[in-house]
Amino acid sequence: MPENFFKFIILEFPLELVTRFLVFFVPATLIYLTTTKWLKNYFAARKIQKKGFLQSKVKHDIIWSAVNRFILTFVTIGIAWAVAGNYSLIYTDINKFGGIWYLVFSLVLVFLIHDTYFYFFHRMMHTRLLMKHVHRLHHNSTDPTPFTGYAFHPWETVIEFAFLPLIISIIPLHPIVFAIWQFGGILLFSMYAHLGFEIMPKWWVTNPVTKYFNTPTNHNMHHAKFNYNYGLYFNFWDRIFKTHHVDYEKTFLEVLKPIEVAVQTSEER
Image 1 (cartoon, rainbow, N blue to C red):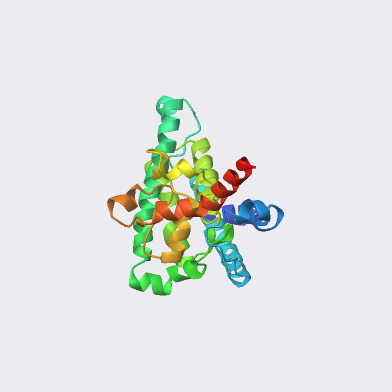
Image 2: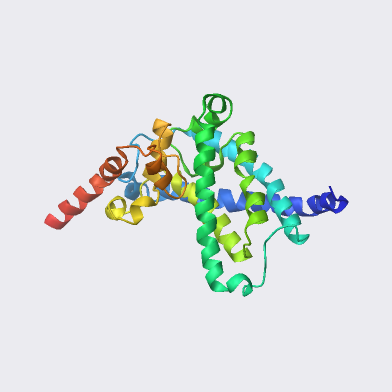
């Protein structure tokens, strides 16, 4: 490996490590405090599993998320080094490859490919051997919180995030697309999926388009029941391979039912 790679690591590591921790723990902490403390009364009716979060499991997830933010620092530095050395297909000229149209196309494409990779990778993690020795750490929290999003066994982190250097080696991506996908998709969506509260409207699971987009209830059921709802952003692979939990829509509506009753009572007054 080129000698300047190690110099790159030494120079970039401290700043990248701090950034990695801040971009995860600041929003995760704010979301957790908002839903469980500051706006507790508002979110109480939206709690997917009505029991309270176990603090021991929250601490477990914080510790392992910290471990994995450290590991992912090396992944990010490696990607930065590859981009700086022109070893990737990251491009900066927005007019290249058809301009704004390719920009939009590549954004949709990377989400679809990542969702596909995640579904089959996730199914693999649920095989007996990997579940017992690797993936069970993530399932320590059967009622997840935003901190659960990165609470993985290190081996799972390495395999899952190997997708990042792979994708920039096969598909041209503009930094704008890469940033939206990384921050809005991977980072914030992991907190959204593990939120523990349902924030989407009642019509979400019946609309012919939005029903294919996952919700906190969808992934919460995966943590509670294990062998269903493997998808990341979407649930069409679950529907195709019949791993979509048959009671998902029913559970989603039951979670929101107290809100509907409260609204009706208020209107009657």
